[in-house]
Length: 44
View 1 (cartoon, rainbow, N blue to C red):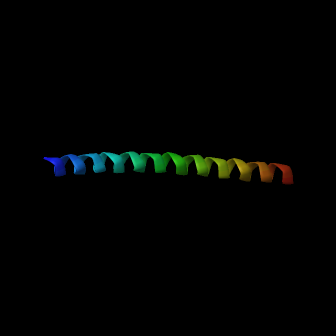
View 2: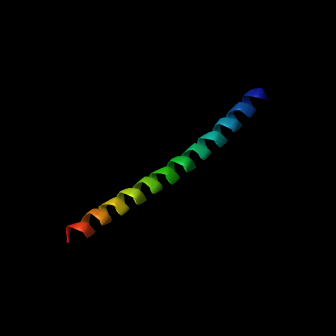
């Protein structure tokens, strides 16, 4: 019973972590693209 609960919690935690990582990577990519666009706008 206790082991099942732990495995359930850890799987939920893993899913949440994956979601957080996805969101973070999207934010980072967005920031990089924004910086890149600014850099190229000022070059013209």
